[in-house]
Image (cartoon, rainbow, N blue to C red; front, side, top):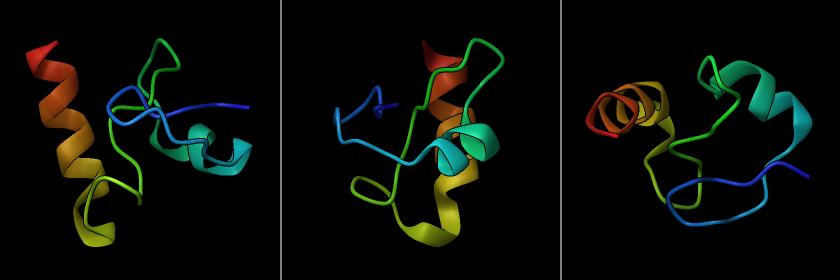
Length: 49
């Protein structure tokens, strides 16, 4: 099961397909980010990594 790189929470396969980066990593999830800003947070964290 995919996990968030930031908080290590499990996420669904569907969530991972939508919000993972090109390497398949998930930088933000509903457990550690506001739902409205997941894509933006993920982009920021991927850029910083």
